[in-house]
Structures are given as structure tokens and as C-alpha cells.
Amino acid sequence: MRVSFEVNGRPVRADDVWAGESLLYVLRERLGLPGSKNACEQGECGSCTVYLDGETVCACLVAAGQAEGRSVRTVEGLADGEALDPVQSAFVDAGAVQCGFCTPGLLVQTHDLLRRTVGAGGQPPGDDEVREALAGNLCRCTGYEQILAAVRLAAERAGGAA
Amino acid sequence: MEFLRPADWDEALAMRAELPGARPLMGGTDVMVELNASGSEFGRPAELPEALIDLSGLPEPRGHGPDGGWLRLGAGVPYTRIVAELAARAPALAAAARTIGSPQIRNRGTVGGNLGAASPAGDAHPPLLATDAQVELASRGEVRRVPARDFYLAPRRTELRPDELIAAVLLPPAAGPQRFAKVGTRNAMVIAVCSFAIELRPALGEVGTGIGSAGPVPLRAHEAEDFLRAELADRWEARRPLPEAVERRFGELAARAARPIDDVRGSAAYRRHAVGVLARRTLRWAWEDYRKGADPCG
Ligand SMILES: Cc1cc2nc3c(=O)[nH]c(=O)nc-3n(C[C@H](O)[C@H](O)[C@H](O)COP(=O)(O)OP(=O)(O)OC[C@H]3O[C@@H](n4cnc5c(N)ncnc54)[C@H](O)[C@@H]3O)c2cc1C
Ligand code: FES
Ligand code: FES
Image (cartoon, rainbow over all chains, first blue to last red):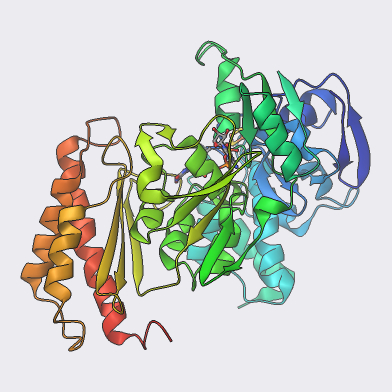
């Protein structure tokens, strides 16, 4: 089947998509967007996290056909050209990236958390809230401490300095 | 395998009637896990459905609202919205929803999908049992409402007929305090080792229970309910703390109602024990809610 939707603000189209194919597969293998990672294809690791119509989802668990006519934003769509998104800069500055496999999913999920909190004029998220928001994103390298530090840093820079 | 996109609910029902081998698809958090595994070397041999009927784009199952005094919750409302919008009206179900998977899973997963998958570990089941909810099943010619207590037949087998879709669940008028608790190895991303839900209905002198992940199907703790109903009969009015002996006995009877097995998530003996603990605790919490609460019917 043919699937048409929008990725990072651009209309895209994929042909000969198998009915059971995931959005993740289409992004990576058909649309040349390998930023979203494929680690488990079971919804367990969060490395494939993308926005679908403004909500974060595991792209491996969305059937490509379900994305028809919808709008997807991937990690490739966070930066503004060469200018990194503040969440990306914070991950770099806090040393929250080791092998980097989990990073795209964590960036998108953190972006969403900050958008819903400080970005909406609210308080910066507390540690419990951060942990809950990132509970579905596994990292095998960092031990999470630097990731939490990166989220705090990004929240502060977003104007939510507590 | 085909990917079918019905234009509306009636067309979805027509597809369901004409293609008994097709599989409904809502949030996909169960279906896609299976499909992704089917092609891989680790997966079971690919046994693919004839087609997927995508319900996720249809507006009908995505709404909720009053229906008489009841709450009608569309089968396709994702857990995130249940947590955000229904915590006051359906506290046990919202509490259960909050424990499901991760935010990404809760943004997609639905009660309709939980009922369709009918895993004995599904977290929506105990609250639906405890609150005497009904499941609305629709086919081309008929809409019927099945009490949750009659819905689960055997592991992964339910009242749902091959030509039917789950349209909604109906929650009775809020009757009183509700609580849900779940045992797992983490606070997130865990299939329940076991779970328990309770509802107290002061105005009716009734109580409801639901046990998850400790039997071939989600269960009610009938004996525990009978015992508690009798014990509470002349305690509702005074609203004094419950004697510990009542809590303990309720826990014992709930544990006895469980029919757990040994598996990777826990032994049968542990599960039975834990069901008793959860029953005792949720009763205490719910009774405290009742003691502190204003008139629950107000
Ligand atoms: C990482 C991860 C963590 C999870 N954690 C939990 C957890 O903590 N607790 C828990 O209970 N579950 C959990 N699940 C399982 C799953 O998320 C839930 O069962 C969810 O409710 C399924 O809903 P869905 O809309 O995604 O269903 P889908 O995958 O779309 O469908 C599930 C089943 O229901 C059928 N179906 C769907 N809608 C209908 C309908 N309207 N009428 C008839 N049949 C229908 C489908 O054909 C399929 O058989 C988890 C899954 C993953 C991947
Ligand atoms: S690849 Fe999607 S959650 Fe792991
Ligand atoms: S940096 Fe390697 S998995 Fe997180």
C-alpha cells in the first residue's frame, strides 16, 4: 500500500508498504531517517520515540498505515538547521551521551516533557516527574545520572530555573 | 495481509462481519508487538491475520461522556486521557491506567485493546470487575452490553464474537471510594505480578473486588466480598477505623479466591500471598477515603 504523511513539516510518501510494517521501519528504511533507533521492536526501550500528532509514541508499535495523513516529528526535526534544540545542547553539555543509541528517543521524550511543563509556563519538572516521563526509555551505558542532569539543565535553560 | 481503513464505525462493523479472519487494530501496543515478532528469527512462525482493520482513526471510540447516570468510555480512549480526564469519575481505572507501560505506551494503549487482548494480567480488568462495569459489544445487527464479570471466559478468550467489535465500557454511577494496587518489579513498564481493585458502595451497602494476574482470567473475590459486606453493614454509619482483624480476614479470603500459577514473573505461592496483602491494603485505603470523604454520592 501507499502511505502519505508529514515528517518534520515535509509531506512524504512511501510505496509498497507491507500492511504490518511499522512506522519505524518506514522512517528508517524507506524515508532515509535513521535517527529513530530500532533496538527491541517491542515497545520496551523507547529508542524509537517520535511525536505522532504531537504525542510521543514508540514508532515500532505504530503501523505505518496508522500514520496516513498524520504528522510525525522525529529527532531529526528537533534542531533548527545547524542550531541544536536546547534539549540536545543540554545532553551534550551534561555528558549524557555515551554510545548514543538511546539518545534520540530520550531527546524526543525530554523535549515533550519540557514542552508540557516549563514550555507551557509551568514549573520545571521535579525528579520524580522526570523519572516517570523517561520510564520507558532505557539506557545501557550512562547509569542515567547524566541524563537526569541534562534534563535539569535543559529545564533551567528553558527559563524554568527553580 | 491487507490494511483496511474503514471510513466510519458502521463500515468497520461491516468489515468485521465480512472478514472473520481480520484483526481489529486500535493503539497497536499488543498487535504490533506480535507482528514485529512474527517475522524475526525469535518470533513464532508467522501466522498472520487476513487483514488489519484500523480503528484508530475513527472518532466514535475515542470519546467519553455520561450515558444515563453511567459513564460511557469509548474503547479507543488512550490511557493518558483516562488518567488526565477521568481520575475523579473513575479512580480505580485511572489509577490502573497510570501504572501501564510508559508514557509512550499510555499515549497509544486503550481499554478496548486491553479487553481485546484479554491477558489475565491486563490492568484494566480488576477495576472493571470491582466497579461492576459493562462491556458494550457491537456487530452489524446488534449492540449488547455484557457485565465485565461475565466477559472473561478463559485465558485470552472472552464473550467477544468474531463479528463483533468492542465499542465502549460503561461504568456505573460512581458509588464510593475505589482503589487499585499492583505488584511488579518496578513502578513502570511492568506486567503485573498480581493486582487488586476494590470499590466500596456505602449507599448500597455493597463492595466490589477484582483480582488481576493471579488466575486464568481476571477474578472476583466473592467470599471476601460477602464477608466484608456483612462486616460493614453496621459500620458504615459510625465511620470508625476498621478493626485489623476485619482487614486481615478480608485479605485471607481474597488470597483464597486467587488461582495463580508459577511463571517467570512470580510463583503461585508468592502471588497468592501478595493478593492478600494488596486486598488488605486497598481495603484500608478505601475505608480511610470513606471515613474522610464527604458524602460520596454528593
Ligand atoms: C512495553 C509495553 C508495556 C505494557 N505494559 C502494560 C501494562 O503495564 N499493563 C497492561 O495491562 N498492559 C500492558 N501492555 C499491553 C498493552 O499496552 C495493553 O494491553 C493495551 O491496553 C492494548 O491496547 P491497544 O489499543 O494498543 O490494543 P491493540 O494492540 O490495538 O489491540 C489489542 C487486541 O485487542 C483487539 N482489539 C483492539 N481494539 C478492539 C476493538 N475495539 N474491538 C475488538 N477487538 C479489539 C486487537 O485485535 C488485539 O487482539 C504493555 C505493552 C507494551 C508494548
Ligand atoms: S524499538 Fe521501539 S521501543 Fe524499542
Ligand atoms: S548512551 Fe548507550 S544506551 Fe544510552
